[in-house]
Length: 76
Length: 559
Image 1: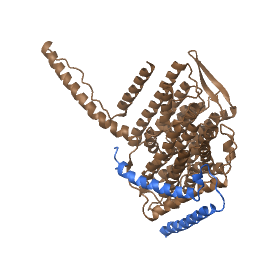
Image 2: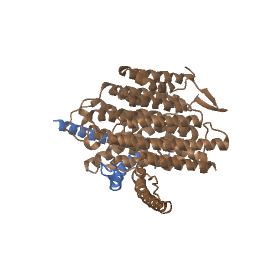
Image 3: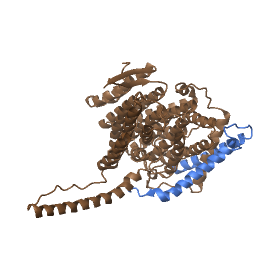
Image 4: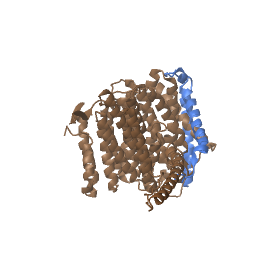
């Protein structure tokens, strides 16, 4: 029972996030978004940048584990 | 009362705290903060000077830069006292109150020597807070913490002495890196602000403290350093690069760290980077951005540490590998944690948004395109470790078979006030902007800006969901993640131990030969005192070596 709670919550959460994502990129086509640099003004640029950055950070972090990860009692 | 140095009431009260009955301690502590806070109404100017040996030290001055910091330091003290209302540990209570008082005192120092004394006071008192973590690892961490903090203090003293010798001036003024004293003072503040490579102490010690202690630690030392840098090194270009590196490199460590309070310590480091960039740009807008960011950061960072402290208090650990599913048992803590997480991630309508925007606008206005996108990238990183990882692993992730209670009322109250402030400042930024050092007309809520920021954040969340879906998101593993404290915890002892062991061996041989010679020539044996074995791994030894090196540096610099 309790397990289902978290799963149904996750399902709704994913749906809502996808819906907002579509809206946010859609709204870019309705007006010209001003920014300090023209790069940022490209349609959907912050969205693309955020998505790629996030994946990059996580994957680099995973790779860093090979170098930086030690046993829990390493310093003891 | 008007001539009482702010913070001093709190230090005096902390000394008399053992005489006060247990049930009255927290109310008395609150009263002392109120007494100290009355100084906020004094306005600007120089209030207390001290003539000593023909020199004048400025013990109490206030201006447009001290005011916002003093306000938030008092506010943080109140939150910490409420949060720790249940805490019966006398040493921790005393240390916390004195630490907060010393930090407030330091803000109002007008010269480098009184600043040095206050900063040393914060170092000493906060070391006791780490010590009060009361585990073997907390105790050794406290020793390392104290050594590093004292080193920073000695560097400041060297810089201040050289400055006085060379210029005859010791008042807090704008400096740059063209003089040797400037570099010493820069390094002293750099250690406290956890610059890259000088940051090991922060992630080492903060997570070792008690649930309440970490909240106190997170507020003062580093923000005092930010204040000091903003006062003495505004517009120093080097800071832009240092700050940009600071925003990025803790991000990767935070992804793989298992202890959630250590994740928050990396996150704290990354937030300091944003502030340091603001100081480096040095315009009115960017300095406003730094101060605003420090102000809101103290609140949401305390909130996040409080929520993890509540988890630690109830569950006994903050290791991601042992947590999950707590939303059911700690719904209010979950809610407050999410508010803190959204604030630090700079969602519109939350406090991080209205503060970070100032720094980003300053970067945009100056045309610093590379740094702008580095910070944009770092913002995705903030969302990753503080926005998602902290609430996700503590309160959701997996269902675990543990039944715990919601946090005690006083903890919830402190978290509630902090959460209220996070949202309040986010919705009504006018209040925050009105206390900033420079008056600026700034509107954070433009459609351009909101859409841009939301696109970044929501698509980063989408990336997270994508990674979890395809099982690419790194799972929690019980582990130690190496950080820059490795250099003095493993590398130096690794080199030093064999060196001193062989030195010990050689001296033993020399004494042996000397003894033989004595016996041969004088006829009777003379026992030379055996050199006691150098214990190179002890903190006291390391401290002796470090401080000796620093004093040699001082002497060389003076010559």
